[in-house]
Image (cartoon, rainbow, N blue to C red; front, side, top):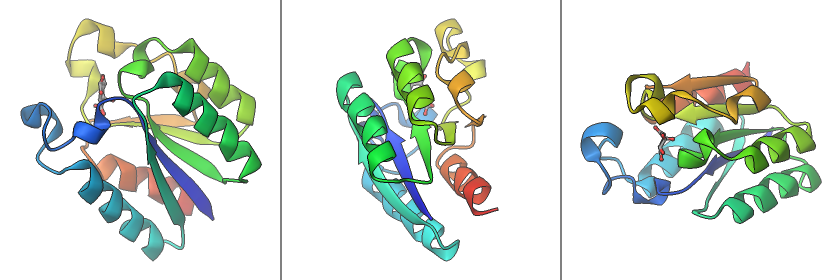
Length: 141
Ligand code: DQA
């Protein structure tokens, strides 16, 4: 099974940005830890990060041609307003799980709304990088 972990804007700054919210672990260590975990479940996990909405949409479309079985997506702040990413998720007809490291429901008012989650199978938030492993467990089941 081939799954993509797709992370959006500013997530390459994990370990640097707002550590009290997002923790100390950096982007590369979170990816390699999640890839290792996925391997124990028989899943090939690829990681992709972009700060650009267009690149994220291109990557989602590419998942269709590259025959991914599903996508774990953390769209970062695009979560809250990108109808273009919502449309892209709908277009490729693959199962997406939306994951947020922080609990978006306990923070700023604008973070409580996800316009992308309705295109996904479900949403996991508030568990830090462990949320990515929870999404792996969903695909492994
Ligand atoms: C985030 C939550 C978003 O509101 C924020 O813009 C991010 C990270 C999270 O993982 O908690 O960049 O998606």
